[in-house]
Amino acid sequence: MKKCKKCKKEKNETEFYQNGIGGHRPKCKKCEQSECNKVFKQKKCRYCNAFFMPKAFNHIYCSHVCKNKGEVEKRSTRPKSLICKYCNKEYSPYSSINKYCSAECRINNEKSKRTKNWSTEKANSIKGENNPAYRNGNYCRSKKKTNIGQRLFERNRDKLKINIIEEYGYLHCQYCNISNSLRWETHHIIFRSEKPLHKYLHYPTNLVLLCIRCHNEFHKHKGLRNDIVKSRQLNKLFGDDVLNK
Image 1 (cartoon, rainbow, N blue to C red):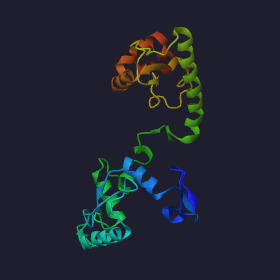
Image 2: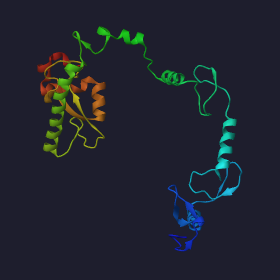
Image 3: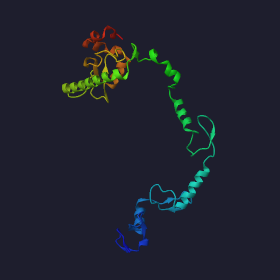
Image 4: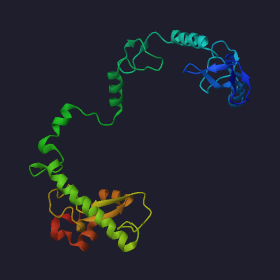
């Protein structure tokens, strides 16, 4: 005999569902079924079309027998052969969702959709002096040189933001003076690509805090920086060739 936790009646153990440990659940079958009726609604079995009360939301079949038979029917209705979307060869699919005969065809199909199709010939054609990052016998984006400059840039970038907050109390664009940008970006007035190894490249005089819109405009039209270059006298540090571009 066992006492039900909900109705608090003593009943035989046969009136309780078994748990995985080898014992019985605390509530009797009647109480558990009444709880299920409140939560779940009756469903139609996908195989035998009989109405049943599910014990979980994802239950489709009324019993394990119907489930096994339903799965066998699914496999039998699968197409025995399909045509690969990429190489147009016939193959036997693992499931009805399969579109390609192999992983290679799937990857090659994704690569064919890209705007830039890189190849070994194209990679070799932009090596050395043909590379846009090649400057004065060196790559301006080489790891040894950019790491040292990057640390200096990050320090000065953080100092610039702190100074603006201390002076105004909030961050704002130093070109259009708005304070509600989605993101703030620190811009090199004289671009890294113009003077890659210059000692004043990452100095605070060459940095300006901009909103996203102004940052994009500065990269599209270099002439916007002329007033800032003259006011900060950057042409004396970097040379007169940085003006009127």
